[in-house]
Length: 558
Image 1: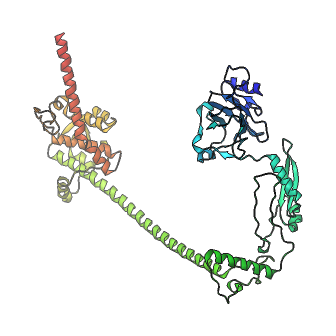
Image 2 (image 1 turned 45 degrees about the vertical axis):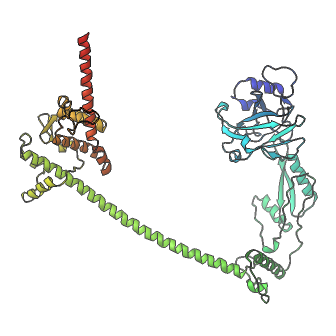
């Protein structure tokens, strides 16, 4: 066994570790690598060759740390959970860390505060380790398996310590328990052998039922149809469960079932008295001296439809009335909830209609803004701010209103705030002789204009458009506002840029943004950065000019 474990350790990695583990370690001494000879005090000796034991491999990591590998379940190598092993040959006050490195469960109670069990020869009662000394985590060094690490300090050299996943309950102990039950010859307990397991262990079938139903139950099991036996209140008796965690031959207390059935009236009377006593104890129910228990309940002799001969249960009238009131209250609350739901549904329908109307109004507003923009372009052309263009072309695009309404639209165009809506670029800007008219008599090259439309980002778009409109020679000697900067004391203010050209830049940027979004807040926020972009472009031009002058001066000196 020691040779098998040493071979597994010499493999050097965890690949195929589960296939290497073939049995439990037996008195295996985990010694450092390169050590030969008998184990010294403090060289831990591991053992799992006992019933319910499980530890397949031990790796000595250091003097204070050990990697432990547990064996998988029988015929199922994918499940590795249980461990149970002993450790001996320890030194007093020796501190170690045990890493169980090949858990298969992703979720474990160890994450929620459960800890392993430990006991020793001098302290045979199982105890749990402190939660602060236990860690459960996924470890990348062990094929990303879940690792449970716990620290422990051995306090007595002569003790043999045993660690387990939880309270062990062996197969032998369970068989002794069943044997002790079978020896009692209880008429409601039956034990049969179904077969043998893969490891040739007995598989038991336990049946707990009344003797009257035993024959029917056996027949139904043979036919693979298990029927639930009928129950009645006369069959229910108070019994006390007794769990044995001590010796297997301890005394077990079981209540004996009364033979035969009592008469219907006596059983019902007894159940009534028991219920009255319980109600008086729990709810403080006080009964008048002249009132008998039968006056508070329905007549137990009256039959109940659909019971098929079963004993009718006696129900307390006070309890029945309380339940009835609760049921009526629930119905009333349900009715209120349904009314509230219907009211909410009607409100949602009204809101949907309003949203639909708002959508129609928004579409109409966009059309009006587009028309306003086109009317302004026509007025500018008529005033002679740009080159002569035949007005018939404009009329063919249905841009002019009727003569009677011409004055009204003109006044609206001149007095209302200009806020154009999104529309295709070619519909807004007039192309002629390879140039594009942006408005206010400003013409740019058509090829450069098309290149500008594919520019990414508002900043780059605004800077390139400013260069197209003013040119670098004009921009380097101008400022956006005409006010001197406050950063320099002796700064001389430069002439401002033309306001109407600045408005054209904003209009072009608005047309671009409006094609991307309809959110008015976002549009206003992005338009507010136009002056900032142009200032940055002017600063870039001045900086490049200064750098060019420095290079020329340096060249002249050389």
